[in-house]
Each structure stands twice: as structure tokens, then as C-alpha cells.
Amino acid sequence: MPTHSSREILADLVAFDTTTRNSNLDLIAYIEAYLAQFGIPSRRIPNEEGDKASLWVTIGPEGDGGIILNGHTDCVPVDGQHWTTSPFTLTERDGRLYGRGSCDMKGFLACVLAAVPKMLAAPLARPIHFAFSHDEEIGCQGVRGMLAEIARDGPKAEACIVGEPTSMQTVVGHKGGRSYRCGLDGLSVHSSLAPHGVNAIEYAAALITFIRSVADTLALSAQDADFDLPHSTISVGLIEGGTAINIVPDKCSFVFEFRNLIEVDQEEIYQAILSHAIDTLLPRMRAVHPEADIRFEPIYAYPAHAITPDHPFVTRIKALLGRNSHSKVAYGAEAGLFLSELGLPTVLCGPGAIAMAHRPDEYVELSQLDTCDVFLEKVIERQRQGASFFR
Image (cartoon, rainbow, N blue to C red; front, side, top):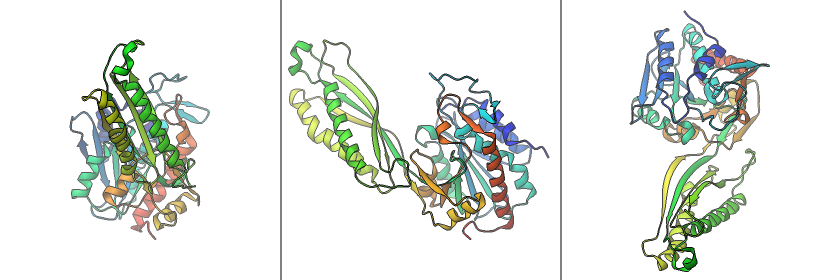
């Protein structure tokens, strides 16, 4: 039976440029071929366009009570970043493995795949499932189709581990997020006649100022000290408008996002912004130009996640790690969807530090892969014994 180290598999995975604008099908085919060496079938769940897919795999007996190991196959772009190594060639230096996705989060995928021979040799009394998704980096989009299929006809798993880079610590919560593109249509006139036009940039600025006031309110509302940034946030990241300095602009668009604690209602945040736009700003615009408009286009949305630190599953994961600490993270992940769509107790735990993700010269430490390998061995042993993660 062939064996491959997590470092060897990671080199293969990094070589696939699965930036979200690209297809991930070559990487999926690689994983399918790897599993086929062991006689393990896998199930593709393609997107509507057919150019990307998630992968669902079960090792061990069919039935309920399994553990899901979740990770995403996509990564963020390297455009505009200065790398001292080739981003899609895994490079080892001073105990670190450099490459795009090495930390976020192909390192975890590599450890899971490297553990396959041990899963087969156990053998498992309870199943271990792989849920490998696409398009996580653009709003956790790809996992949704897979979750829908699991909910419809898949086994009822006991719990889920999302292998985001947490430095192999137990993470019990992440913030939710939404993003919107707001487009404003005004009326263009010569700048010498500015009051006769509707300046789309100025009204966008007024709405952005209001959004900032909502952010200020959120900073003083619900707090959670387990997060580095203990409150919900909003930010505007992109803006575009205007054609010339002497033309009142009739078009402007901007993109904003908010990241919320689980205690904060996403829809309430959005409705406050929408109401100010439609009830306060738009009437002023239409008083000058009846066809003026403000539109909101959703870009992505994913729910927040939380599991109580004293939950038996959290206690068990801490015991397997030999670390009694826990934390929460501000970045988004698929854990909230496994909780909301499948009702699964879920933690985040994987190799690498989030501070190394998305940056040039992204890396994961070899020692982190080693720690993850050992952790997965303990997960396998628990499934070999047929023991619940809740006891």
C-alpha cells in the first residue's frame, strides 16, 4: 500500500493554481486518483457551471456517528504581491514550507490525505468523512451544494473539524459576514451647473458616512472578549465613479462588508443601511431627478459560528491536542454553515497561523504539519475504538 508524507502531498497540492478565479478540477482529479490507489470511492459535487467541484469521501463503515474533516481547495491570488519564492512551487527553508495555500489551507488537506493509509489499517469502527470544498475564499459558496446533498441523503455525522489555520489550537467561534455592492444612479450635468444635477459620488459619500456611523454603534454594542477584535465591524473596500473633474458624476458604486458576532443580527445591520439609503437619501436625489436610484447587490453571506467552550466535543478536542486553551477568530470559515445547515457541533483546528495566510511568502511550519499528523492519528484511534467524541 503506497504511503506519502503530508509534506510530499502538500507539494503536489500547492502546484495546482486553484486561485478562486480558476477551476479546481485538476486538483480534485488528483485527490480522486490518490484515493483510488486505496480503493476509496469519492463523490464529486459540481457547481452549476461545471468548472469547479467539491468532494465528499467516506472511509470506514457506512452509517451515522462519523466525524467530518472539512477543508477548502481554493486559495487567494498572488497578483501584486512580491514573493521571494515561486508561489506555486513548495519551497522548504528553515523549517518552513513556502507556497500559496500552504497555510490556508492545503496544509490541512495534505495531512488528512497522508493519514488515509492509517485510517484503512485501523480499521475504523465509525466513519471518517472528507468534505473538501471550493470557493470558500469568496464567501463560502462552494460548500453549500455539498451540505445540501449531505442533509438530503448523507449519514448523520457526530461532529465536524474545520481545518483552518489555527496554529493547532481549538477555535470555538468565528464571525459571520456579508458583502454588498451598492450602485447609485444620479444625473450628470456640467460642473458649473452642479445644483441641477444629482452627484452620485456625493450621495455615495453620504451613505458611506452613515455606514461608518453604524460601525461606530456596533463597536459599542455586543462584545465578546474571546475575539482579538471583540465587536462586529463594517468597512468599505472599493469605490468607483466619475469621468472628469468638470462633470457632475451620474454613476458611483462601492463595495462594503460587515463581520458580525453571532449575537448580532446580520439582517438588522443591512436593513438599517438600506433604510437610510431608500428613505432618507433617495427622496433627495429624486426631488431633482425622478429616475435616480440606489441599488444593493449581495455578493456573499455566511453565518457566524459558536460552540460553548464547555461542550463535550470541545473538551474532547482539547484532550486530543493536549492543550486546554481555546479562542475565537474574526475571519470567516465554513464552520457556521456546518452548524446552521447540518446542526453539527463544530470546531476549527488546523496547521499554520492565520497571520501567514493571504500574504506574500505564505508558509506553514513543518512542525505544524507534524502536530496535525499526530492529532489526526488520535482522531483515527477514537474512530477505531468506536468511541463518541462527546464522552
